[in-house]
Length: 310
Image (cartoon, rainbow, N blue to C red; front, top):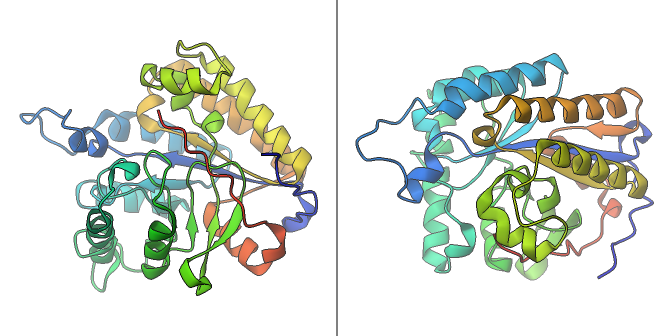
């Protein structure tokens, strides 16, 4: 399918594109869900939180960039102080990434999907963390956006749950930012998607070999940080050319090597150069969602969902 025309998009201060820098995953959540975390090993001191995230947050502060960090709700009870004092207090948006990084496509049963919403938004999740008298009350905003682990959703069923639980935007795997109506057109969800080409795991992880083979853009072998930087810049340039939206995605657990942290900084420098020249609007997804809702004619209604899985 040919890309949608977005040449009429007008972003704040006449910027040519909206760019969201995002982070995904926190701590042991994914490993616990997959049964990979040793039962004898305590949780609460994962290297990605204690060693990597402070370096990433320092870089973001250095370049005055606020991000949207999609975090599994399980982390609120384990790393609540860090989330509150190091992430939210620095102006970063906390988005939702499932309870414990469940592969969303695997929640085939409607009850399982609803239970994940209920737990994540309830007393053990963001509801308890931000409720009256809780440590996050008045300091951490409730979720506005959801990035489904694995990038896939269950069509209108997921969209309806998003609107039921007060979510305003969704960040799945897709090719175009869009506005999608929920069932019966009673409400709509803004789609602020990611492309696999702007995800660090697509380059770094051996387990993504199948996706690299399917996309046929790179060799099956994992790719270097230099390849990532080149492609991320290219995707930003494409968004500028089309006056569209692009999301760039980094995982703290994968930014654990000096050359990968350096790659992230090279991307940040490129974004700041474009931002400071007024070429891009570098914002959190929360602000981009608000702008789109105020200017709904900016986007079409076809996200061009990406159904490929890794």
